[in-house]
Length: 516
Image 1 (cartoon, rainbow, N blue to C red):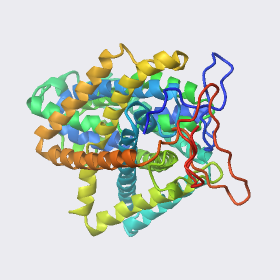
Image 2 (image 1 turned 180 degrees about the vertical axis):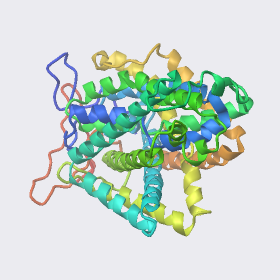
Image 3 (image 1 turned 135 degrees about the vertical axis):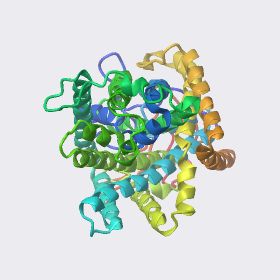
């Protein structure tokens, strides 16, 4: 199969600057700019930040701030690279489409299905976490019933229309941003010793240097904290998937990527700095209750635990909603490129409803496995997704390294967002990812995850390569297989952009998308 040219097909060109602002796809453009902006803003605030950061603090101590700063820098570089490619060629398959066009169909297959698997398992994990909070409030209720309820709600939301997903995420993100902003404001006042109604004196630097020092567990503790922080940033990629269904995808992606730096700095690094300044890093409550609850309790904030439980619940539900959406769009995009069962890519009313159903069901199966086989099959699934986000990031970096030069040569006007100091920082990011893999191999707790994730990646790569060698040339990324709704006629195949020719003839009337 031949690689596809750098510029993706588009429906029209925006009036200003000749920048393409539509994606050639039967998926609707139902997301408004306010939706995309808030999805980007809220996407950096996940349950991993509110809960999972406690283990990192317990391992690294105050140096967790350095760990989050290092991993945050890596994520900024990845988002910049992804933003460059997504602004130049918006597609609902995002990095999977970019990997296919840069490296080959096998790479798009591997990156796309690895990410789909990661999101589906994550949906199950988030459902379990949200259900545990609900059971804490309603002790006599069964946990599985809450998971089933959440699954039904978000499956229904994503089945209806993309604007429903956008509205849910808009308000979820607004609540998360509001909560973290209030927390940072309270923390700043407490550090200065001017928090109204609190008798807690200003801590100074005591908790930063006086409880075993800034590196209480040495470099090993910092490494554990670094690994924990890297995986807390997962979820940022969803905004580039959602951008393909927005009114102005190019502008939306560009804005989201350009503001990523201050969002990461404030929400992640700022939060960690506030927590370790106010609370001793070795306080057992940091892990048992979560670092945010421990901080608010330390300051004597009334009902801190329940307040943060509400925030964590919102973060978990937001992640479930976003992951069902992201998994369904990735599956639909893969099918449009003949890299999955064609029935999975059927689009009804502008929504890939079959992909939404299958992704939701797979997530619910993961929940059932957590009850039936928690010590083997479910743990096996968890280990398999442990390092997949790093695999995706590597595909992003390699794709950007290859596509940047091609785009500069063929369509330089599409480079609305540019990677800083290309190609130097791209190579720096790749070196950083390689270093994280080495650190995972050194740590006993993460070594098994690395092996299982590597095994899944290798399996997908082999399958993708076999498909690449036995199939006819792929359809152009960006087109999507369509099943007409009962009250609508079939959607016309996408036509080539001016001056372009199809890479291959249509492969018969088999429901797959034709070349754009």
